[in-house]
Image (cartoon, rainbow, N blue to C red; front, side, top):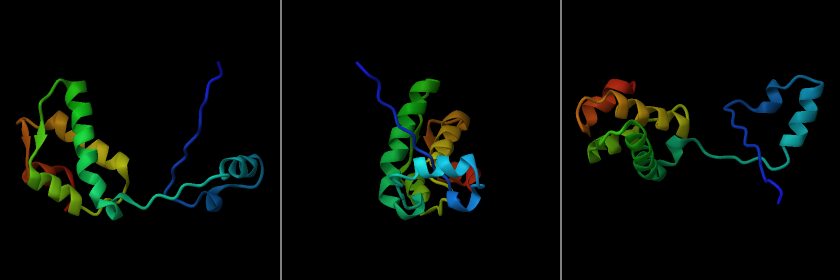
Amino acid sequence: MGSRWGTVINTDNPIFKTIRIGNCLIIYYRLHVVPIHLPPLRNRVDEIPPLVHFFLQKYNTLYKRKVVFTPDAIDLLCIYQWPGNVRELENTVERLVITSGIPDVDVALVKEVLPF
């Protein structure tokens, strides 16, 4: 039985602009067989609520918490112009799960961690 694996590389800069001539060029052409272009999270607003719920479940379990986001807090996350991508959303949810002193994360708590 063999093992299967793959590599996914994500960057917000076009890799071809940052690679120097030499071994990196060989790596670039080996990795650039099937480029996957994902629009930024701010352009995929419909994905934010399910991602928030997924990350909430993950971090509530990990930290033994019972944090929930109010609908208004999720709406605020949806209108935020995410400069990063899903990882930034995940980090925000994790931070709110860890730092919220109350079980319900509302708009005020979200505004404390995101620069609006």
